[in-house]
Length: 156
Length: 404
Image (cartoon, rainbow over all chains, first blue to last red; front, side, top):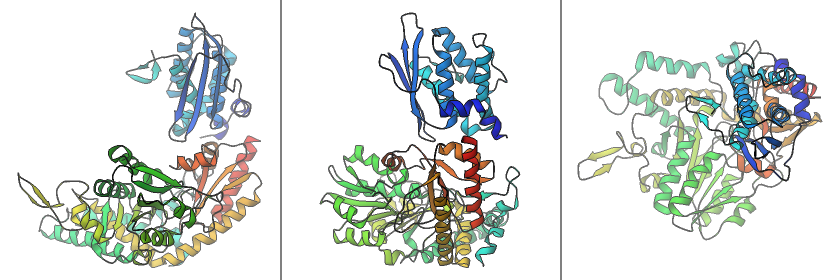
């Protein structure tokens, strides 16, 4: 195990200065992610327009560097994304954190992939996986995605 | 046995953990096990195994004697009046559930009050919570002061003529506060209110005397006392165990079973339904002998010295904020580190072999009061040394460096 892999510069930076932090006024969808193990919470707020496009996204919460950085990177990436794209990216990310060595979705740009892959260090720390995925599960709940019956880390 | 050599008795310290010497600071969660306890489990299963209290063959009789021998050892260790006041359970959690369930069934009615404190572990709140729905009782929480203490006055203030039982921790697993349990019991008894003490953190660190303390119920967790997991103890005054209904039904706890009805067995069998954690009970006898060999007074002295040293070291570290400054503090050092979440602290410390706990420590009521979702906690056992606390501090400085 290597701490440097877990606490990469990108994570430390996003953890310290999270983007899109704080509730905004005209959100129309929201959901809370909760980690009962540590009591950490991430609340995701969305403004979803008629075309099911995320016009605005933010989060509120308290948690470790990993959970804050993950929420920060996720909100940056998801802004202006449409419904099927959101689901594809979400499943790609959760699949990568769970087992896949890389991100496969064509919807994610190279620089965005680098940011997301910085979170892959948690794979070596099973107790910390939930930290990296808490915001993503909250987003899935806010989008009303249902869990795949055969794969709890996949949304349909 | 000298405290200096104690570490040698614990085989876990002979091995490297991820290439590091283990600095184990999580004993409030669970303690490590001395070789004698591990050996006893092995020997029992390999040479002496039988179920207890049922068959009359040689092994069964021998195992029953060993099992009952631990009951006597525990009785003497906590100075209970009668050996039948010792009930084995699957843990301290079950011990508290047993009391909440049976006492609640018999003595609590709508509008009655149960008095707890804000320091309580979930296991001394959740079992009582069920009685809100089933019986319509009210739960009150005596307030913790700014030092993380509960005073006798706060308890007194919260007692009303509706208070039917007081259930409090002996030693807080977060602030380290040692409660004035003897005085609280005296006060409660002057108002005819029984007292349950959650002794999970008290029993491993403090000398116990049930007859002097005079509480009605005392719950013990054996795996925090250098003993095996899956075992707890409920001490209860005989009058309660005789008067309260049985908790679980099954084999071993009955006298006579007929189609028309059932009569229940004598103490302590009445509360020990089904096959018990036999090997664990027998091995726990070795834990008691191990503690007795060192002397609980010596353990307490050693741990108190270390607690004071740990506080000194952490206070000197400007980025560390200690949680709780109670008048009487036992072997728990909870803290936060500026700009670093407790889970990140725990992961980084782990890399140096320093094992601490991070989170709410099953005390969400207390953390809500503190305005924190999580804290980091270093907790001590007999095997800890000043070097362990120096290493803790050094690793905390490493956290600061990573997050600077």
